[in-house]
Amino acid sequence: METFFLRGSSLSSIPSSSLNHRSTFRPINRRPCLRAQQSDGSATDIPPGEFKVRNSQDEIAATQGIRIRRRPPTGPPLHYVGPFEFRLQNEGNTPRNILEEIVWNKDTEMRGKKPLYTLKKAVDMAPPPRDFIAALKASYLRTGMPALIAEVKKASPSRGVLREDFDPVEIAKAYEKGGAACLSVLTDAKYFQGSFENLEAIRNAGVTCPILCKEFIVDAWQLYYARAKGADAVLLIAAILPDLDIKYMTKICKLIGLTPLVEVHDENEMDRILEIDGIQLIGINNRNLETFEVDISNTKKLLEGERGEKIKQKDIIVVGESGLFTPADVAYVQEAGVKAILVGESIVKQKDPTIGIAELFGKDISAA
Ligand SMILES: O=C(O)c1ccccc1NCC(=O)[C@H](O)[C@H](O)COP(=O)(O)O
Image (cartoon, rainbow, N blue to C red; front, side):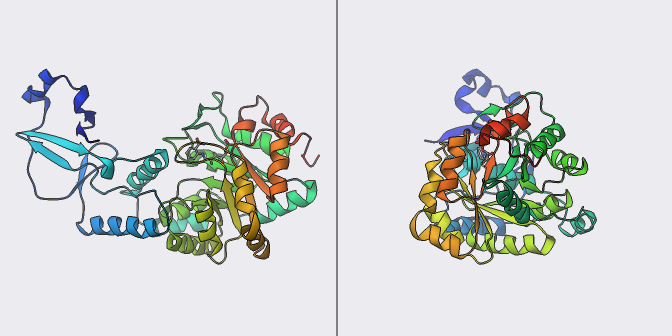
């Protein structure tokens, strides 16, 4: 269905009387140029080549089974009626689901970032990276249970605000005390109320657990930025990134000392990632990021049969992600073959997240 948009407002919600009120609208300048709407609503000119690049990016991605499209550079195209300027919204220029919306927002955030070379100095000056995988392995050996990547998560699109009294450093310290091997810090502001300031503050507060920067990476620039802010690992989401991007980003990660955690949700994504050399850490998300449906049997399903064998042969560590609330859940994914778990909601919501961890595992897993 097509809806008309007029400077961000649905036409159907505008009283018809105001449509006749000329002073409400800016008379248009019919320039035959390409214009993109930026996050602040202003417009900017787009080099015509960028259209083709974005289109072919999506075409390549679609051949790999990727449904998430990248943001069209112009946003909804302009449509003119007399002196009025409308934006025509349709399937092609409107995000189809929450993940696509988040990705399009990231594409917009990337606009106007300083060139990559300006980050080089900050990367060189960042605190040295810590070994994320070694921390997971050490924890697994110590406890005999999946190593915990504890997520510092204030809010999410599916659950809203999870914790009102949110002090990221306090929560990170409580996680460390409770026996977390690593931390995951959400840095997306718009949908998760996270930030790079949180990540930096946790790193600077002397927390020793390696930190995963939980971002929606669409551009190599974000890898350098994450490292500059003190991250030790980053998330690469197979539902968003074509194989070649994952290959190059993995190489960049290695170059700058980041551990990539490549996240998959279904068989196709798992098969794609298992064909890529050099992947050491795969996360299986039990949450469908397009529909929010959570089903922890997804982890088991993706580790059965040949896939499980291949993972063992390649010595890949698998992380079970999302929807884990009880010791039975932890035992279930461990039985399926994971050596680590990534948990947010069930522990961040507890008054004392240290106790939340003990409750999740059914016992105290701290080193003390
Ligand atoms: O959590 C969401 O609602 C969400 C929505 C859209 C994209 C990503 C989303 N979450 C990221 C995650 O995968 C989780 O934060 C992480 O695995 C922890 O999950 P949980 O233990 O269920 O909080």
